[in-house]
Image 1 (cartoon, rainbow, N blue to C red):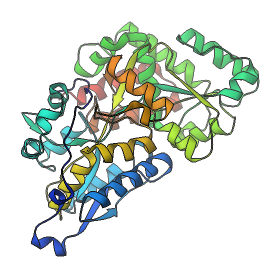
Image 2 (cartoon, rainbow, N blue to C red):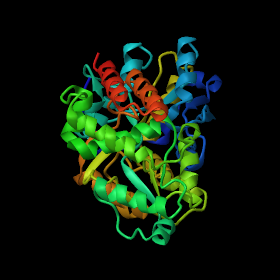
Image 3 (cartoon, rainbow, N blue to C red):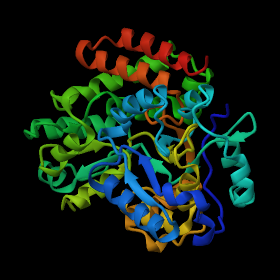
Length: 414
């Protein structure tokens, strides 16, 4: 399977609402169950925007199958059980990239290649994206967006009050700023949540210490997890954890984000779905910077939707997929969710300031995939990595973490 970074999506001709209409049998098959983990804040707002466009373009009824839990931690367990029992939803959310390999190998999702041809997607999407979505020449998902993972969010007032006036651009700068916040009595200089959000932090540290090529090698076999450079990165990660909230393993990402909003933290490492959550909850005093040392590296992930084997309403699902790929659907979704469109035929000025900067960065930055969000790693590898991260959060055994992460990465290559 191709694992390279996604390219931005090109122009996609919209299909008419009539094209989304159904056959005669659809009188008894109007419901389309859409299974996601978008149940709160900006994520839910984004889903609502997409649903409104679906209602306009399609003669079907949306049924919300959302299961709450950041990064799909709970939803994926429920979905796995349903698929095993032959109770597939009409469509489900999955991260584009390596995460889909498990579903494909198990024969649980349909090949969409013919629909790509029918809808003109093979001409509208750039060849790089087609390559990244293809497995043995077949395509299995429609991407809705592009997210950036390696963003450091700030509480401007907390930093200003502590005398932190310059944005940290190196690991040394960042550690110094965290020490300043700690000395000023900030309870959690760096807010963080459980397992997968800690994995995001580790990945950002490793991008800084290894560079984009070395980081990519961790997942494709080109970089030795047992090297001294990786060991150095793990020590930097361990040091950063010492500045985080002690109850991090009990927090979902929204709980950690609340520490920033409440002025109990100065920094918060999270993907760019965070500002939509901030804004939905009335918090505007935030800033952002690429994670220190990451420079112009854009760590990407993408949400996508599939057509499951055994879907009760495949025609309704196809209409949902058309909506996901449409200009109207992507704008309605991404403006509210905080991500940027997978399509490139968008007007950047239609989007808020952060998204305008992300649209530009996506065009020019060096792109690397996220393991925590399935772009670089299979589900089995992600689960093993999260387990290793959770154990390290308690025992602080860097050598043990290094060994466990090497084993997790190997799972994704087997």
